[in-house]
Amino acid sequence: MYKTIAILLSLLLVFGMLSCNLDGSGIFLTISESTEIADSNLATEPVREILYKDTNTMYVLHGTSLKRADISVPDPIWNNVDFSKPISEAVFIPGSTNKLVFSSAHTADSFKSVYVGTIGTTITSTIVAGLGNVNVIDIIIDGTTVYAITYNTTTDIISISEINVGTSVSNTINTFSSAIAPTAVHFVSPGVSAADTEKHFIFIHYDDTQGYINSYLTLSDLSTATAFTEFLNSVFELSDDTTKNSQIIGAYADGTTIYLVTNEGILITSTDNLTSFIAVNNNDPSEFMSLVLTSAITSIPMTVVTIGTTELLLIGGLSGIYYYDIASPSSTDIPLEFTSDDAFYSSLSSTPIMDFYNVPGDFPLYTATSDKWIWQTTDEESVSTQLL
Image (cartoon, rainbow, N blue to C red):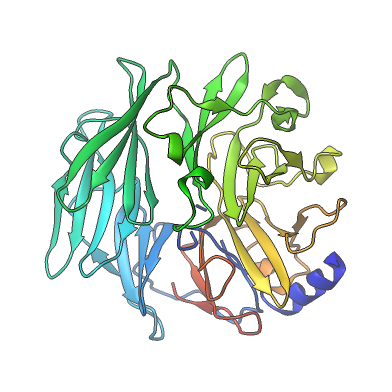
């Protein structure tokens, strides 16, 4: 089956890119005939994240700025949405007036402040009450509900707050004692309409003795939980040191199945809300995916696309792009890497994938790369178009 898929994908341009389907993430399909757009006004920094696309306008987080363009025209012009402050973490809330909830680093200290930005006739931003001068770990969105996760280095407290986007006020829902600040937080959800019991925050901590500690908090338990639930399954152990764990760097939900990817390059599945786990490719280190170069990379993009009747999980990284058949996987199936023999990959082989954006499982797909490029794939039989 994989040989058939590989042939198909080498004839088409299977292309894309973590972290952006309408929750964040995507990839590729079709031979690209595009070339780099000369004199782009986005030619100095990579697109970190594709935040949102309405009918024609796309919003991207580019460096520390928000950019937008009408991508329905050839050679789109990308303009700055100027909040007059650098943007760190950010989530986009579409509406009659679009809004951006974002954190901004201070120049005088190591803290950040969280803002609600309004993208209307004028561009404004208001600091969120209760979230000025904080250590922001991440900002998470679930539909229109926005959460800020912060860590107090004095009290060793992790706080999860909900932000009222209309009033720019935060409400702390729960706090957790932790001697170690989280290095990353992933939010995994099968969709906005899914039950809160199927949505999870995954926290990553580093411990000198144990290596990385992977734990989770289910959204339905957000206000009542007293601690995170740790992943204790052996599938997370390092292959060369079983006393330590590899960190989770990717998380994606497709229906009732949750897909996790570790820093070591192992794909892990769970079909019972993170109770039990199966490692897909841990029989031998030769099966591991080569996705990241160091432990400093805490998040990679993942998404799902459908080619005919074949549903593929796409996994992007710094040194390769992998696909895994999730429509009808066998016990021997493992993630496979696209190679230089695949037409699309010759332009991407030295280009880290920054983000994917698509309606999960569907086209069009948009991919951001570290070469400042954004690529659009409208369907499995069309040629990718370079938007940036």
